[in-house]
Length: 321
Image (cartoon, rainbow, N blue to C red; front, side, top):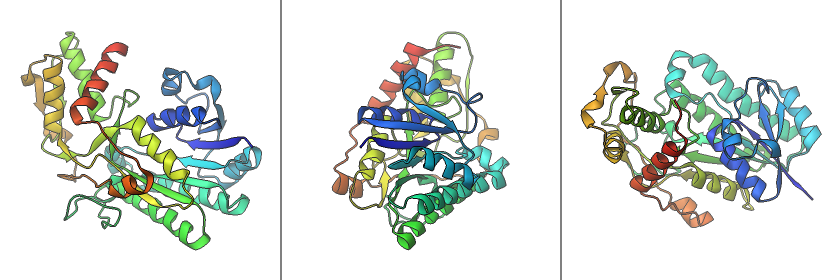
């Protein structure tokens, strides 16, 4: 029988790479979008996938619309990647962020419970849920202490998933992803912004890069490999929650200076602007990938330097103003 996967948030970085992986594994892929007319298919077009995917409009805050989609396509798997995912925007729009990021998950799980409890469900959880922890590395057992409205909403959504897994015996996996990058990131994300602005300075199109707090450290990996981990956890006989991470952290200062040096851009073009500091910031965060290594045989092998080399080269090849 043909396998059918539904992906919410399909137009994002992870949705595009996940679509490619699922198509390679002979799935029919259904992508849910709020509006076909206003949704950007840049990532899917970049990977030459748009023509192979069925797009359906669906408001995830409306349970009836989700049930209609499930009845029409009878999926075997659902990957929920949809969210208001900007940490900075969540401080400006905390209520809207919390409402969408939790109600959408409730509706998807309720729809599965009502229509077909055998459908496998993947929830994109976030390392932001942990906040400022007392001990590193973070593991699946580390206590949550979220420090942004976005992180609070993702923590609530995560516990909704755990509750449905334990209370209703649904197959609900939570992938707790740390920062992960690719060429398909939008320009608002830090690493992509740094690379693009450095190239602009190199080409004489800009004079400086304004940044916020560069002393903070993050665990940063490569998105296509993280998507493989998502897929692997959904193929297991039992659902669980897994950290997807590199196992180490790097300072944002090192990232900026490495990119500028690689592109031969003077580092004095980097300007720290305190207006870009967040109201609440996590100083250092990185996870242990021991559980996923042991259980799923998934290993991450890039260094931060090889990752940045990949991202810089791909951006140079595709750069447009």
